[in-house]
Amino acid sequence: MNLDAWLEYIANQHQQTIDMGLSRTEEMVRRLQLRQPAPKIVTVAGTNGKGSTITALESLLVGAGLRVLSTLSPHVVRFNERLRLNGAELSDAEICAAFAAIEEARQQAPVIALTYFEFSALAALWCARQNQVDVALLEIGLGGRLDAFNVIDADIAVITSIGLDHEKFLGNTRDAIGAEKAGILRSGQRVVLGADMPESVLARCRELKLRPLCAGADFVVDEAKRAAWDLSWGDERQANLPLGNLAPSNIALAHQAALGLVQVSGAQLAATAAEAFIPGRMQQVNHRGRLLVHDVSHNPAAAKFLCGQLAQRNLRPKQVLCAMLADKDHAGVYAEVTRAVTGPWILVDSHGDRGISAAQLADSMQIQTDQAPDMTTALEQAVARTEPGDVILVFGSFNAIEQSLWLRSNDDA
Image (cartoon, rainbow, N blue to C red; front, side):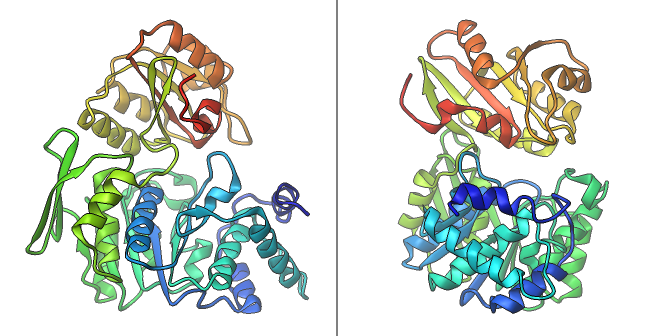
């Protein structure tokens, strides 16, 4: 089978899209002998910022000469974005080989029904072992304690942020969600925590006798400058780091994690700040003279963070295009963005099992505004209402960014 056929196949091997629990993955790891897929393992959990942190950490480790397998989820355009070796996507053939090995093991008696996410996680572990990497960077999914990757004991754990999202699965308070995310922690780990962690995360660290490195205390990001930032840790400080695609706070988390594995030079840190890139996170694309800023912020905490990043880059959107999934806090996201962005909105239909129409989104946000059936139509409307040099913000779910076909090319069109 080719990769498209495999992806269709693995999407239909379990009756539920999400089925929290570790027993299936535990058994598959045993069958495939994947308990130690790499000499060093880093897990990254959190409500927002996981992909950016892994991308920055990958850049730092590869820059230091290590061989690195990274996982990212979900993808924007193609599945291969989820599995990277030294920053490059794995080929269709490599991923298909992983799926074939997993399927063979899955069919042993008793046959195990795996979710799409479990198949993907096992493929990452298999590819890490096959490629004999030095480090595997594993992005935890929506939770932590019951995420498929949590069957692997990591040497370093990062929790980027805790906010309200996926409450149906994780709980309705930051403390409850933090407790789920803190399920990735192990005794003896190097632990790096983002800012404003709830007490449940800190309590778990105390239970395991961990001494976490905490943002704002053990390392400090100073973003007071325009287009540059400073990072301090211990007795060291690096000033005037460039402001690129990734948020400084996530680069700082990655830097503290990397220091548990390698020495990081000032030049490596600056290069990562300037060059490390992940699609759909403050991604800027020129289109017919306008600057499109794409971001996958889809909960209130992420929306607030997005507005801060726009302000630091002196980007003032004249038009906002937004598509979201059905199970999100639409009104909360709208409130956060409109505190900082004054441009008019166009709401756009989202697609898939969790998609909602623009009309439904407007009702949920309790607003009256323009609507469009797809991002292409919305963009045409936005271009007609703006001038060359204006900024257009395209944000919301990953589906919103996936719809943006112009995102696939940086060519001005």
